Amino acid sequence: MAGNNFYTSPTTRDSPLFKSPIAIYTLSLLSLCVLFLFISSSSPIPKSPLPIPNTNPRFESSFVASLEHFLATNRAARDDDTVRDDLGEESVRTLDDMIWRKENERLYDEGGNVWPGGSMPVRVYVYDMPAKFTYDLLWLFWNTYKETDNLTSNGSPVHRLIEQHSVDYWLWADLIAPVSERLLRNVVRVHRQEEADLFYIPFFTTISFFLMERQQCKALYREALKWVTDQPAWKRSEGRDHILPVHHPWSFKSVRRYFKNAVWLLPDMDSTGNWYKPGQVHLEKDIILPYVPNVDFCDSKCLLESKSKRTTLLFFRGRLKRNAGGKIRSKLVTLLSGIDGVILEEGSAGEAGKAAAQNGMRKSIFCLSPAGDTPSSARLFDAIVSGCIPVIVSDELEPPFEGIIDYRKMALFVSSSDALQQGWLLSHLRSIATPQIEEKQLYLAKYSKHFLYSSPAHPLGPEDLAWRMIAGKLVNIKLHIRRSQRLVHESRSICTCDCRKANISSPSPS
Image 1 (cartoon, rainbow, N blue to C red):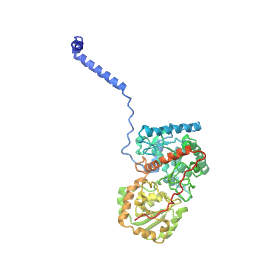
Image 2: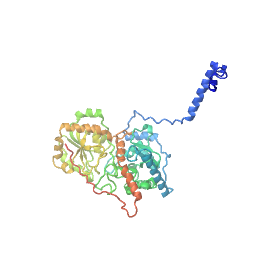
Image 3: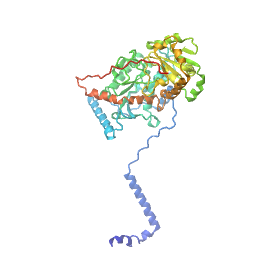
Image 4: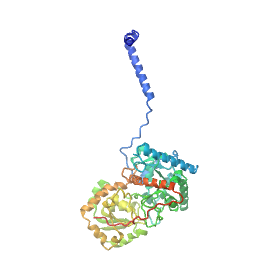
């Protein structure tokens, strides 16, 4: 049969060629080579491996030390797709269509599991602004921060004040860090605008306000205004999906009204109207971030060692005369001065002041946290990282991350009217039982990590919680963008709710 010829033919199996061991070895080797070439040519080229995150990072919480490393390893880049508005309205329409397509892909083609605003991570596009808005200002700080005679009108060291409000640096440094160095997974940087949920404006408003001549600073503000509002992404949303750090209440005032739709990163709300115009800031739109603490972080070992040393009942060190709501400070001094177990000291944020405040807080059970010129004060966050229970006397205070943190667990809220009653405050503090004090101290130890900025930014640190809070606003941001795009002339142009309840603090339950 024809089928049998293949196995019995003398020209195949019985051939001398197939009986030679050398020939068999050579043919086998050739076959393996051919098989390898076939597999190599048909398989896709493997991608470069993803960067492996640093699993044992060294956290740096000093602004000056972190900035020194940052400036030594980073340079102004020019490799992204930031677009100036050379094409007018056409570029806005093009970007809007690209964003719409990307959102539809995420909703339909990817099963809806990554719908923007409904899940993490948040995708952030970081504008590559000219160096005069970013790196030049950081260098300005670095080249002048040792000038200790540079003070504000109330005697506070300017550079220390900038450090307190350096949230713009910590967020930006984390966003632009190499992927292999970042630890946060709730926010990612994207390099295509159509992929972004949000747009970050990396302008250092506090440094420019304090370290530049007044008219020069205002001119830079106007340049930043034009640069940002020229961007198609800004025009598409009128700034509603843009993140703007304005953490010092004095900064950026001359052009704020043009940025009112953006998400502002603030130290507080100040609903009194002393620092922000009506309608500029509100909880539904903006994010409150903590000050950078002036004192060193008291870790678990420090808390254990200081526990037996906390013999002072109530401590405060800071400016005793303030404006607006901060006028309560001088009234409290009059009531509480000279009483056993109470220390109230005048002090500033310099090196000597830092050491004195840190020493006093670590020896105290309660730390007074009254309003400053604004409802918030650095004293609150110094107390938290020192393990000292904050006694908050600021009726208009809106603390950071309140959607995540329950401050009643670690602090006391006292109304101004109660605090100013003769003998009421100390009687209230002395009535709190030891188990309740110890419970608040435990929560202080647990929550304190939420207030420690660092590089790299650590999970559940303030940078991480900021993006978690912003993520909760995404759906509403997108709603208002689409609504503004479809309104006709006869429509109401503004959708607001003026029924928000006034902020009135009350004592926390004991």
